Every structure is written in C-alpha cells, then in structure tokens.
Length: 435
Image (tube, rainbow, N blue to C red; front, side):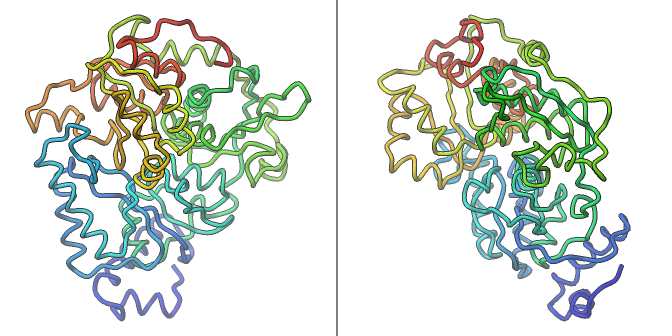
C-alpha cells in the first residue's frame, strides 16, 4: 500500500502509540483487500459499546484511558439502556450502571453521545461523494444510497478510523463498485405503498433476492405518469429491510437517489439487465404471511415503533392517535427515538400525550439492543422470553427479535400497532390497501 509521508509518520509513532497501533490495523485491513492507498474520512458513526456484551465496556474504558481521541466528527450508535431514564425500560439497575460508563469514556475521546441508529436525523449529513466510516446497517445504506456518501460496513475498524481519520480505498468507496447489479420493477399499486411497513416489506423481498449486491429499484408510476416519491422515513425503512433480509449496503432508485437519475445510468456502461425481477402485490402479502405468527385477535404484551429510530413527525403522529386514549395497562408500548428528538418531542408536548396514554418514548436503545435478549435475561434472572407476542411496523425488528428475544411477532401498519396497544390484542381488522 502506498502511504503518504504523514501516514508513515503516524504509523511510526510520531503522534503516539494509540495512533500508531490504529494505523497499523487499518493498513493491514486495507492490504488484505488490495487497497492501493488510504483516504481521509470526514465523519464517523461509531459502535457504542454495549453492556450486554462481555468485556465491551471495559475495553472502551481502557482505550479512553490510554488517551485515544477522535479527529473527525464522530457520532455513536445505540446502547442497551436509556441512559437518561433507565428505569422506563425495566433494565436491571446493575446493567444500567455498567452501560452508563460509556458516557464519560466517549466524552473524554471527543465522541458525541448521540446513541442512535439514525444519526442522519440529527443533521449528520455527509456531502455527496465524501468518504466516511460507519457502523449500523440502516445508517450505512442510507448514507450510501440516499446521500451518495461512501462507506463500507464498518465494525470494529471504525474505532481506528475515528482516531486516525483514515480508511482504505476499497469496496463501496470505489466508483466501479457502486453500479447496480439487479433490476427490480415494482408493480405494486402506489396506494399500497402509503405506509412505513409496506416499504419495509418491499425491502425485505428485494434483500432476500439480491443478497450482498446492488439493487436498482424502479418504482411504479402515479396516475400522472410520474414515479412515486417516497418520504425520507420510508427510505430509511426500505434500506433497513434491504440490509436485514440481505446484506445490502447500497441501492439505487432512479429519479430519487443521486447516483442514478435513470435506470440506464444505474448500471455500468448503461448495460441494463435484460431480465428484471417484478415485485407484485402478492409478493408483499407473502411477507406478512412469512413473518407474522400471531393470529388476529390474539393477546399481545408488547408493541414497539421506531426501528430504525423514529423522527419527530412520526412521534407527533403517534401522539395524535393516542390523545385522550389509554393503552391497556398490561401492555408495554415503546416508541424508540434518539434523545435529541425526544427533547424536542417533550418541548412540543408529544411525550406528555404519549405518556398520559400509558406508552413510553424511549431513547438511546430499542428492544433488539436491550436487556430483553434471552442471554441477558438468563444472566440477570429475568423471564425468558421476556416478551411473548410483539406487534411492530418494522420488518427489521421482526427479523431480529425472533432470534434474540424469542417472541412471536406481527408486522402491521402504524395504525394497527397503536390499535393493538389500546386493545391488548393483535388488531383483527383486515389489512386495507393504502391504509
């Protein structure tokens, strides 16, 4: 690998042992994938070390005490606890105290305590074409696809990129790896794509087919013969699902995402595949049949929204639907978000409305990352499974909680999730198109 003079000095210890070690790891990583050189990154989304993983917090604290400092703006991903209000999730106090040790460590390193899977909602919007390093599959795919920034799936190496500002030039940082590989024609009526869960289901279909490659998604036309334009939260849900059923890191939607204004432009040298996959309404219905194992009308004990974390408009919608109503007292109902959005929701009165209804606005975490994991419940003497029947509007949540929490699940639109929480059972109303 070709290194600049300053990179050689960093590796040789001119900026201290922590930087020298980090550079050595990054260089070895790049050489393993034949990267020709390193590039400067402008931003990093960092793995927020988790109390539910043995030794994770202790390793972070040791690293911070060695004097590690980040050199680019660095946000952090989710935790297993709501650090500001730990008791609202029912986390064991000992585990909450352990998780809280990340804050002073991150602060000493210069890391921003965002603790969210959607840092883009907080204004961390890397410029088009910029190099970044990120963890969290739903953030990565959004950065790559919707913003046109360039990142691979980060993992542990984001730590080393954060303190050096470097990453190997490889993978999705290279233009030749960012072209489409598969074409998907969405033949679903536009009115069926008016809810968040429908976009999640669409991503789930495509991700299973494409695996780790790059799908090009051609959306249906409206009555005026223009492509439908998805909302930003729909794009987040779509990307999260693509990265869940497959390991998609980048997708293109012609006329929507910035690197593919047309279908032809999405493919290398304009070579559009002759065979396209057609996604029809029945395919969407099949997803619900596949992931739902709770019968309509069955009792439930948990409803969760906000995977990935909800934005302010989504929280406002839930508050409006809950105003003057009451969640069944034996139901846990979480709306998950980042702590800054919760602050604004508190100011706007949405949190008060939601809490008055018996639901909770949870920050920093989500059920998948919480103490409700089966292994953690066993360690702390909690009931296993901690949840029996969960209803959610997120296919990512459905996919992971079945394994990690061990509960039954139902994917439903947001309105049906809210109705389920109010009734204490999976809302038995039949799915209505466009609802």
